[in-house]
Length: 112
Length: 116
Image (cartoon, rainbow over all chains, first blue to last red; front, side, top):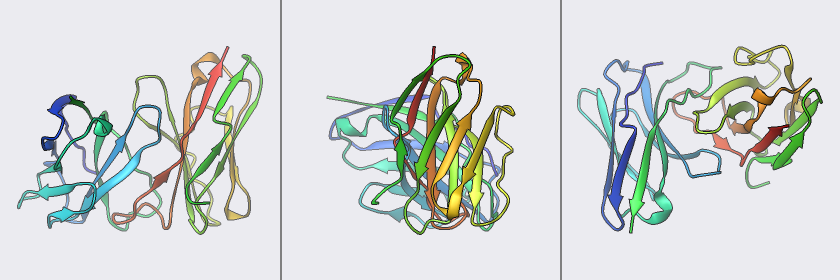
């Protein structure tokens, strides 16, 4: 699976959009981009994933560049409860029996 | 149940004792994973079960660690002769199919193990 690079930490004002970048310049054509987050003292939580088209769900939007070498997770109106470590992971479709590999992620602090 | 359930939520044990950690995956999920997370660290993969296939044990840190999955459902992670460096949060996850590119995993809340 391709490696990802994320900034170690970011701050965001409450109510503003949080834009979390992820670089995956070695991504292959059959690799999906996944985002998870881990709120303090909880297990990781799935947020969203995509292959090449932008995706949106009730939690967030995922913007993937045309060359797929980077992506941005957008939390449109960040709240204090969005303070967490956000993990960007790339996974090969159909790779079968291998787990998600978590890096160090980005620690997002939402500030009142 | 509605989500992945792990028990106990907290476990304190003396060095050298054996411990068993339990994971109840989401009903119908064929894949089950164990991870651990030491204080301030990332998630470390331990072991993976998929259906009746032989488990992927490539992440187990030593032969003191083992896991079983009975009947394709509940799993138990056993740590023998615990050491202080085993202290961590042990997380279980399940997914409907193997973690291929388009299937998300659901995590439990973890078991916090403290070896004293």
